[in-house]
Image (cartoon, rainbow, N blue to C red; front, top):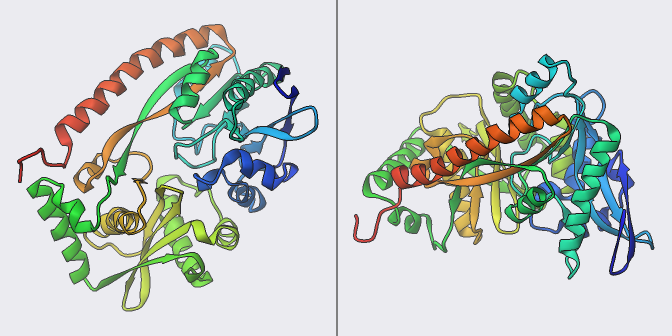
Length: 390
């Protein structure tokens, strides 16, 4: 595969996360993003949410030195569909198959069902980290070519990784999400004070209406989350997932395992009425970011979605000194709740030359439009007041 300052590097594919030592994986992944933890990926596999007939077959890349030490890892899956990715390539698949080609299987570097930006080329920190990232990209391309897949996709990498992937010849695509940033607020009222008057009043009105509806909000973390709370949340998840996706991606066993192996990384917001949970939102806690993931309800209450998913998350982030809240894909309504448009990234290698040229042309034009959209959205819809504005 190649040489570095410490000797020859070799790459291999693991068909289960359990084929890779947990400590070695986590040393490369770091502690910042909970979705990249060995325990999180293991919970997906062990619960059967990935693997088997899910269409997500683990093909994790492991790069080792001559002594067998793990130097880099990449979470990767062989895919037989394009579900659960949140960076859409259905039109590309349709174009290739109409031309007589076969789009699936493909390789996907990602965290399944998780549109959360974070590292994808996971290397242990050190002076040779840049070289290891480049080696990982080169190996990914070699694997894609050797396996005969139609394509390789790296979704939601960090920006510096995106540049490395683009330098290696992958097509660099741009997307957007809505994130909330914390410049150091001391309280929720400090955050409100930064907003334009109309937005500030609207949020206060929404929170007051939820409180007056008889719904009580509870934010549970760690060991405070009991099996009964998971049971209640899973009912919410299944209701929302069944309506949005037809078949929810995750099963009850996944949430059981998540609560057992990573309790300190979970924040579960429950809405209760008359002592009974009626809605909930699941968040994961990172080193400096709170990640909002799933929401569901069995009763409709005006503004409850905003309270459970956005205001409770902001409250928690401020109280715990987190720099950011990421609330997932979609939703211009998040502007009114203090969130701003932020770029997300993906990179794509396509074997078929004709399809590659066509996709490259489309993505180039799309990228310019997304850049303009992010700037325009933030300029026109920012809820934050300008200096001197009430």
